Length: 371
Image (cartoon, rainbow, N blue to C red; front, side, top):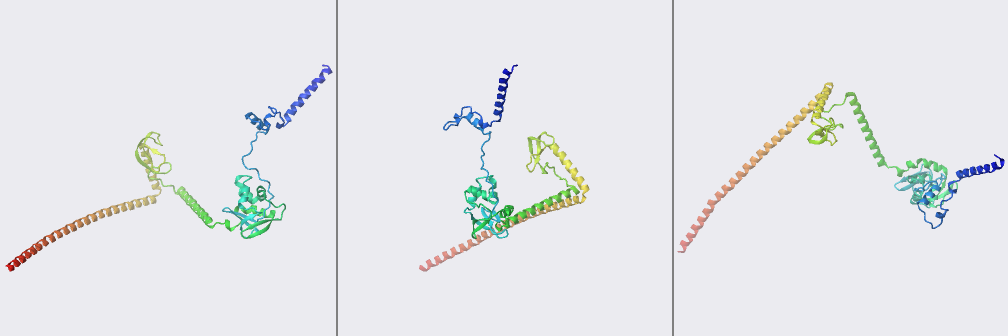
């Protein structure tokens, strides 16, 4: 091919390569708008296609719904110690060994102002942490004045008075290590709560030790089998009415007549219950052969139980006899009282008749005298 025709072809190829390279390397924001930029003019409405194009230009990143990140802290503090107690702030001003005082204001901001400013940035669950470890960022968010250099003073008002306190990194280092534990402030110490926690701890340890001893003893001596048929959770099975729709948990046949007494969803048919009952008796008898002393104890318990039952029945029978005797005595007393009343009534009748006769004789005598 002649050189005259080669030069235009080379120039065309180089121009194509440059255009392709520039299209790949240009940022997304430099791409040409499909509508010529009319959708970005003031007062122009945007549809879904315009919003999709806008998201494509911004890289598809959506704005965060949470608060923005807090500014970087200078890691300085005016307090040697700090404790949060029941919505109040207690601080140590002069040394880490002194008593804590209730903070009223620091730099003109009270605890409520500091809390509200701390909520405007950073994670939502670190409000107290920002007040304790990033106090300069909290002041910046609240629009308050903060110290510019180390060892500058800031006004602190506590329940003990007003003070000018230096702000430095040494205090911040001690405070950031102890504020989560209360910095040994008396206000953060709760003796009642500690006593309750220690009591619960001792109870938990005692229960754990007791269960461990029981399990160890059962492993050494063997667990005593129950004389009753039990469900998988160790509850006693009881006889109920025939449930034709229930399924036996052993043979999977419909129609059960035994179920768990504690309400577990465990059912047995009559045949499976008999087999389980027989096996329970055999296991108990085998365990008694290995532990005859336990068998003797159980027999003594049965005798005592039977003796108490007989005694209670005898007492009931004696009570019934006494009740009958009392009722007979009451009936006899009633009969005697009624008889006495009748005799009194009979005896009073002749007396009344005698009085009437006397009155009649007196009247006759008076009439004779008048004549």
